[in-house]
Image (cartoon, rainbow, N blue to C red; front, side):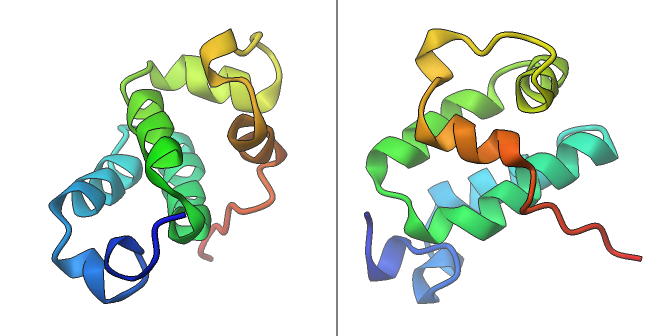
Length: 100
């Protein structure tokens, strides 16, 4: 895990361009479904991430939204490079908070 300055919810979020860019990309996917899935996932779990998890998420953001949502919903098989604990967490979708 990356402590302190690289924590997106900590003081370093404002000064770390990589994390700011990831947050923006996670919340500006093109559809509300993707925005909430990726944005809420980033907001909820990124403070716990280390370099490997950040790199995984960066790569995931480069994938087509329809594929990522299909993986998250279990309608499309997850490619081997994305399989693991982070994808398992993403597939739970219990982190999504939809404002009313």
